[in-house]
Length: 130
Image 1 (cartoon, rainbow, N blue to C red):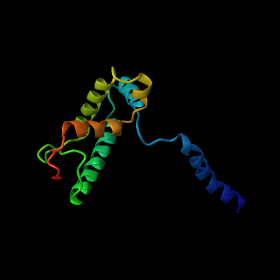
Image 2 (cartoon, rainbow, N blue to C red):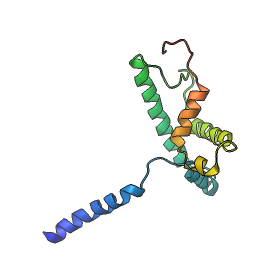
Image 3 (cartoon, one colour):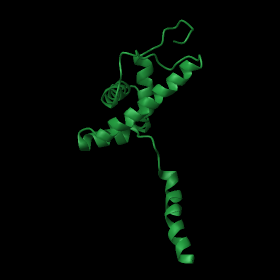
Image 4 (cartoon, rainbow, N blue to C red):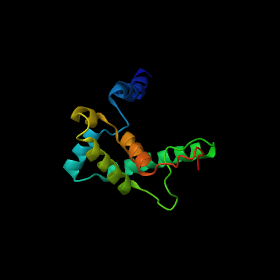
């Protein structure tokens, strides 16, 4: 019984010990490192596609509640991982001369994607959400 308990608890304890060091968000530093090594990671595109879909659903939720949306992407312009990668790359290049390198490297890709979507697809300032 003791052995079985140890066998079952050991993986759980290892995961709990790892939690403070684990992060779900990819930083610019990690992204650029992966991009340099792999020449561009498919996983980053898949990751950003998931983040983009999440932002889209959050935007839809805001719209259905009559709240101002974060951004107003045209329905006729579907976006995916490749487009999101380009948007993030443009944000990195724009910010590179404006912020300290250490600050840019710690910035997360979801933040940059959200910033890019807001800037690329501003909502009309009519006061009523679409």
